[in-house]
Structures are given as structure tokens and as C-alpha cells.
Image 1 (cartoon, rainbow, N blue to C red):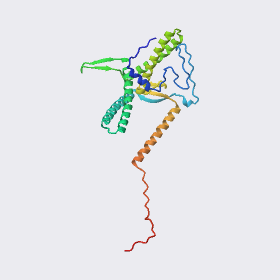
Image 2: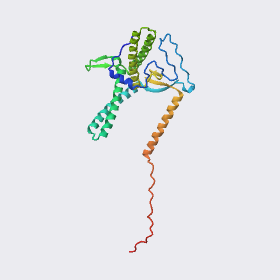
Image 3: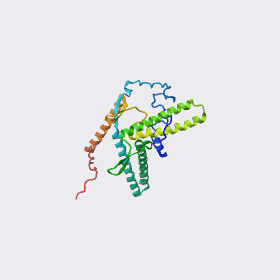
Image 4: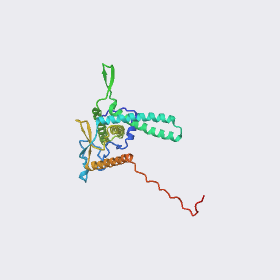
Length: 282
């Protein structure tokens, strides 16, 4: 089996490094309670079923709305634009700063913003232009050539397919290595696995940055409303509701304090000090 090498700039690997939540190996165990999957061909593999949760309320069989695909795209695009504006503002502030302390703080803030901007820009490039896919459309009315990347749904589906294809490629190649006796060929397979694993990490990181999905969780997509749902358990949903309620209470308390600040106690009025000296008589 072959796999098409996606020729991205070397800087794209930084996106995979940023996504430290991903397993270094796409076939590594995805959950703590799941055994590692053996690297053998799918038709001969006998993977042990994951251990069932002891608490029925830990079963992830509830659908929790994550986001619509359009909302995910708009949010990512807005974040990218806001970061770009912030970087420009910080550059202007740096030029006017007079103290070393101010300059150091501005540089630190700007560096963090530049990293985030780079990460989200790369993620959007991968999702909406993955594999150097370039289709063009000519508008004869405006005499303009447009780059076609497809709908958000098409881009999402394409990126997920690439991720799963890379995962399958790594599994199949590891199976070939196990069956291969020649050391030179084993080393060649190792190089293919390493390359595909890096690409897998990059694609997985891009999907999380734009759509908030990771290989560690299960999702369900409803094409009728273009909405992604996270498969969650009752315990997770209850915990989330409690966190939301706590946050709402804190926000309500802050709003109340802002509107009706607590009255400060009046300062104690001290009586004039007593003296044994008689008052002066005029």
C-alpha cells in the first residue's frame, strides 16, 4: 500500500509539537482503560474490547453539541484576524515604549500572539488547502480566477479522511515490518512510519485547532444541520452543568458588586483627648 506524501513546509511540524495532547504514535492506546492495539493487519487482528466502565453513568452514549462546522470556521477565522491586529498594536506599543520592563512585557506578549497566529494559520491552511489541493474557478463576469477549496463540510470530511488514511498506513506498515526479516527493508519501513506519523500529528492538531476534535474522543456528525456532537457520559454532562452554573453565579456576583458596591463602614470619630490641664481663661 502506498500513501501520497503531503509536501508541507517544515514549519508545519511545529503545529504537531504544539498539539502535545496527541499520542506520538497514531496507533498508541487512546484511553487509559483501553489496551494497546497490536500493530497487525486488520483482517487478522483480534483486538481486545475496551474494558466497560464500572459506573453506567460513565458510558459515553450521550450526544453533546460541540459546534456547527460554519461556527468553527468563523471562530477560527476571527481568532486569526484578532491575533493579527493584536500583533500590529503591540509592535506600535513597542516602538513607543521607554522602559526596559515595558519593552520586555510587550515582546513576551507579542511572541505568544505570534505563536498562536502561526498555529491557527497553519491549521486553516491544512484544513482548507490540504495536500496542495488546488482547484480554480474562472468568473467570466468579473474576469477573476478564484481558488476553490470546497465547502466547510467538504474540507472537514477531507481532512478527517486524510487523518484516518495516515493512521491506517502506519498500522499496515508496522504489520509489514513485523513480517519482514530483512533489516534494510525494516529500516526503510521505519522511515515511512516516522514520516506518516508526523503528518498524522499535524493533521490531527489542525482538526483540533479549527473544529475542536481530537483522536482521543468519539464524535457524531449530523449532515442535516452541519453540527458536530461529542459523545459524552452522564457524569461528564453533570460535571459540565455544575461548572457552567458556578461560572454563571460568579458572573452574576461580579455584576451585582459592580451595580451595588458594598457600603463602606463610616470611619470612627474619635472624641477629643482628655487633658488634666484646666482650660485657659481669657
